[in-house]
Structure formats: structure tokens, C-alpha cells
Image 1 (cartoon, rainbow over the protein chains, first blue to last red):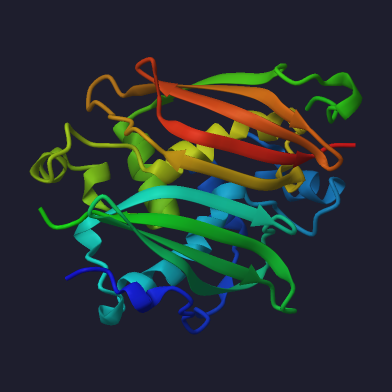
Image 2 (image 1 turned 180 degrees about the vertical axis):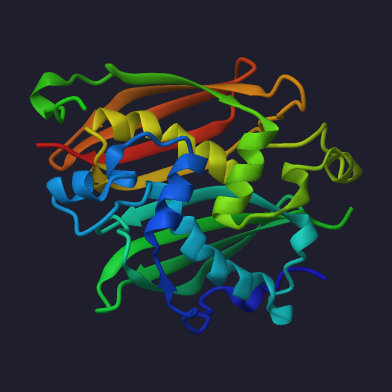
Length: 148
Length: 141
């Protein structure tokens, strides 16, 4: 089944709020081999002007993931997960994610292109805090390999 | 923790950070748990080879996540100065069950502008780049 060409412009309902836990930030920081004290020590984070631990830049993918699951799980999108390769990834920040944030992500498909039998699906997940203020937008391009 | 770098002291082409990372299967399992990405191609050889891969691969997002860390350290540990970060996944990082994988990151000043700088990352494994257009925009005074 090919990717639905009408997918561009489609938005999904906001994913359930994600509460950023301090231990999750520490766990993720260790996993990406981060060494900044701002990821580990709340006092160091406060001394640098943040309310709590600062998450590493790519932590946003954990929040974005829930929205990508909506897209990949939508039968009408026609994306066969077994054929998906992550093409590229971008994060555009208004501010870093900090422990204690309650984040809500909303995904919009911004483009669907065909290239040599493959489809390239670009999806933007806008992530806002509990006050509705923008924190980061996570943008993924998924390459869906064509049928052989 | 070093002082936060100033734009005036930088020139395009300067290497601002360089780091080697050694990945093992343990690193991949840890990243799977922390990120929630449990695709078995990142920890099971039999599954990886059954879908035509040469073996277990590092998560692209793990490579992206560690490649920015030398820049964060250069920023005095303050990842809040990262305004934008993008990469293209161009080649896989194969992580051998016995010997692991060594990933090398070089961070250079690509552009200096009003907001700060664009830092360009060269990320290599086995002598080949694994990320394309790996760019970090950072705020610098």
C-alpha cells in the first residue's frame, strides 16, 4: 500500500501531556553520554538560571515519539512501519526542556514527496508547555521504501 | 566547566571541540530504555540480519544525541544556548558485539552571524561520515 499523497497538511490531535521527570532527564543524559552538570545536578541548573535540570537537546524526541506513533498507526496514512527509515531530524528551540515541564505535542504532516520509488514524509511536532508557550519543534523526515 | 566562548574570539573554520565515543551493545540497550525506541535491530543480530542489515546498528538518534555533546560542553554545559540542531542520517553505525564501535566527532565553526554561530559537525565511524548536514545553531554574545 503506497503512502497517502493526500497526507500533506494533515494534523493529528494533540498527544496526551508528557510530564518531564528529573530522573528521566538524568537517565536520558547518561544514555547520550552527556556530561553537563546541568543535566544531572539541580543546583548547577539553578545557578545557570533554570528552574530545574535541563534536558539534553535531543530529549525532545521522547515527547515527539508519541506523535509519530499516531502518524504511523493511522491506517489511512498508508505508512508501512517495516519500510520506514529515519532520513533526517531537526529540533528548533524557543527554550530548552526542563524537568517539571508538562509538554503537549501536536503533529502536522508538512510534505509528502516521491523520489525514485520511495516516499519522503516530513512531519513537524510542535511542543508547547502547560501555559501553551512554544518550547521546541521536532521535525522528522521519514523515508518509506517502495515495494520491490 | 570552561567559560562561555565569545563570538569575537572565533573565526570560521576553527575547531571548537573534538571527542571520541566508544559504543558497545550496552550503550544501545541503555539508549533503548531511556528513549523508548525498542526496535530490535538495535540489540538483536538475528533480527538485524533478517532485514538485510550487516548487524546490529546504533540508533540514529543516539548518534545525533551524542554528537552534539562536545558542543554543549564547549558552551559551558548550557544546552539552552542551542537554538537549532539538525542532521541527516547517511550511513549506519554497526556496533560489534565484542569490539563495539568508535565514533569520532569534530565540531567546527561554519558561520558566524548576529545570533551567534553555526557549528558544523563531522561525525565519522570507520573513516566514513555517518551524519550529513549536521549543524548546530548556538547563541553567543
